[in-house]
Length: 112
Length: 120
Image (cartoon, rainbow over the protein chains, first blue to last red):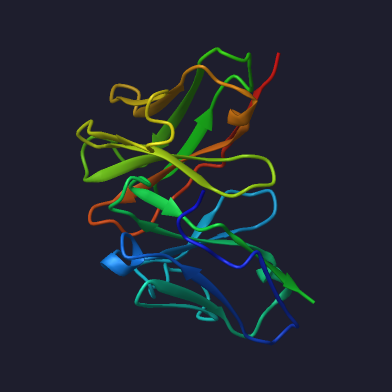
């Protein structure tokens, strides 16, 4: 019952650009709350990839970028690499009865 | 460098209480404006936020779990704990702890997670 909706899967060839959408509502992203993105490699814990909509923590390649507009946010991966194959989740905050922290439904990125 | 490590019993009987601990190193859990979160992930599924406890002991829980969950701090051990009552098979999941700061800037770092299986 996630309040943030992501496509279940996206795929691309090495070197291509892929984007992942995160669609919310007026009680979360549309209310002005920041969006964060996480990468979860197989069998590991999630790792912060993008914070505050478009900022990269130290050590995250600049191939990863984030943006936010209205009630949605997006994560873009340019120059797709084999090691980018993982699950990606968006996260924001919500002012309704859904709870404080809310996660997206998750997207699996496959490198063809 | 802040590090978190979860620990727990692994197997819990239905209707019993699941108790997990998250040990924090590299920072005092009560001395900085941090929010210590629990998140879970059922096998093959997505992430679900459970709740948080602030450095000062303020708690906030997911409405879907509010009636069964409690989070506490043990400052003497620099640990936070999760208790989930009346568990069922639907509570089987990998449980993670993670830190958020104030103002919020994403959950970072995360522990490696601990698997809790509810089964008789």
